[in-house]
Length: 105
Image (cartoon, rainbow, N blue to C red; front, side, top):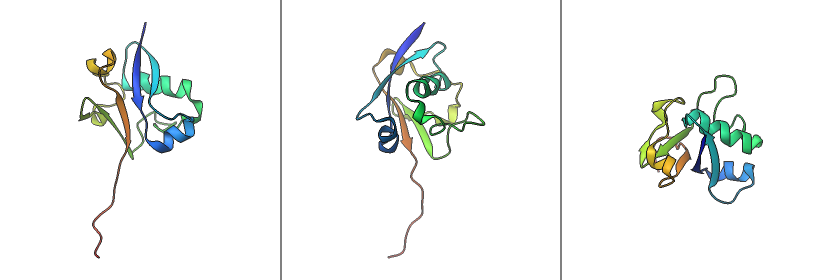
């Protein structure tokens, strides 16, 4: 059995995948972050290795996962997707992290 999940990608990944908006993905049960990225990479093979490291399978350091207004990156790739994401009420977001310090002007 699978569920349909709406995923929002950052602009550089949308460009690589040649999509203009959110993507809808059929995710196999159990619907974990890992299964969601599996579905993304299966549908858009050009994104393999961009969201997670190919060797370790872990989320890339400069990407964060958000769902239902919360950072769910720290939960790990085996974490279940939130119920609101599974119902289609909320998207699952992949967000490019912003880093850097203050700059003297």
